[in-house]
Length: 256
Image (cartoon, rainbow, N blue to C red; front, side):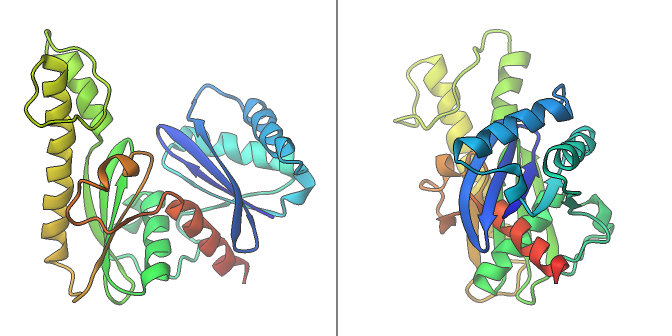
């Protein structure tokens, strides 16, 4: 079985594949204070809950945008699974040309998402990843990673309103029932939610104009994808496990 690990700023998402089938997946809170042993005990407990032994894991691949945790998770994999994980980065084959001026600057998760999206659709389009940051990644009809755009995530924006505006409270990020709020909380939720729907659609629309694809795909992923997909005029499909699928594909390409 293959263990795939996506280390994000807010969550660590793990998946377990048997061949091409995702049989289990878990979402853990990202904690920079946990040790390799703490992560090891936690992950082994999750596996044992499904009657899976550590020895059943025959390979590991990880993508990380949190450098301080990369070594911790690598140590955990070696200590608790006797596996040195592949790490998505320079030197690992992705099967996708990177058109960024400096490919080393691109977040590993963005490349992984692009690989999975192109494998799924075999045409150009845009991946919108709604997490701690909101990222937009453009894939050409030839399967090249063209680049993209990065915006603050809605959670960051909500927290900034609370921190920087003295009279505004901290609010839950959710879809309000109406756009015209009748109190401060409703007004903040309306501005945040519908403002982000507008951000998503406007950036995506302009990005599609730069992609030479007659029938492009537009998909969303990430922890907040389900919140916005229905209200977006351009997102066609939400794929929560896109990053995990991309990690599996990259692992297979390198094992071969």
